[in-house]
Image (cartoon, helix red, strand yellow):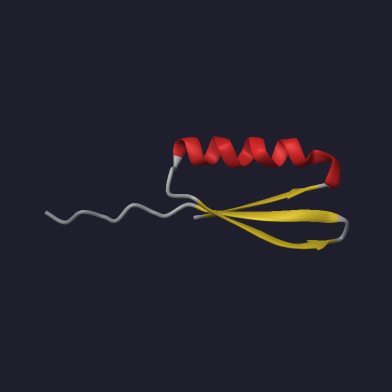
Length: 55
């Protein structure tokens, strides 16, 4: 599952809050910074989906 977050230069603290909250819930989360676009910075948080167990 991918979570896309857009924020401005002034909201750097909010970016860290989002990352820490998601990593607290899902420790295997990968963080990827993308290029600034339309005056916003973008971060993509990729949360690995659990594998379905078979019986």
